[in-house]
Amino acid sequence: MKRTVIALTVTALAVGGAGVASAKPGKNPGNGAQKAGLTASSGMDLLDSCTAAKPEEAGKQTATGFAVLNAPGKPGSPKKIVGEVAVKNAEPGVYDVRLAGPGTNKCGDSVGTLAVGENRQGAASIASTEKAPGAYYVVLIQEEAIPAIGALLAGARYASAPVQLR
Image 1 (cartoon, rainbow, N blue to C red):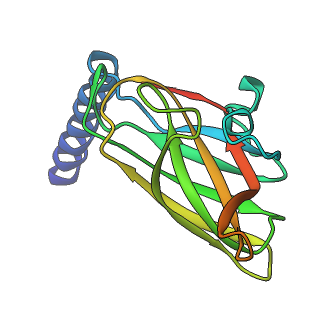
Image 2: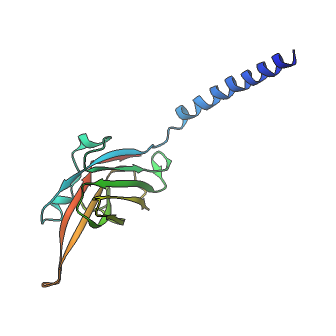
């Protein structure tokens, strides 16, 4: 008898708790992390080669890598933008990680660096104080120094597809 009462109590609590848990996401849906594939781009013109990859790459991982972006906070008023970017089969060296979106130029604002080793792979975290909802994408730029003329030229670059953050 005692075992039956305990079993029924545990079952009732489990069923009741499951109903409450499943109701929460419907009432206040979160932003959720969005994944976008990376593609390589090149060229001397900084503005033209920093455009986002094709939108059909959103939600995918390409052979070149991917970026994952999230805007924690209430939909419509994110607190910041965070994420990760990973690249493979890239030229070894250090890349400037940039986040482009509403209120930034096409190449975006620098949010960190990514080091690619001899294995041609690298990863970095993204943390930005950007707070506006909108479409964002990640740009990786490797600058090449030309000491003879004291200038920097853009070398290898990669861009992710845009993702919509609320």
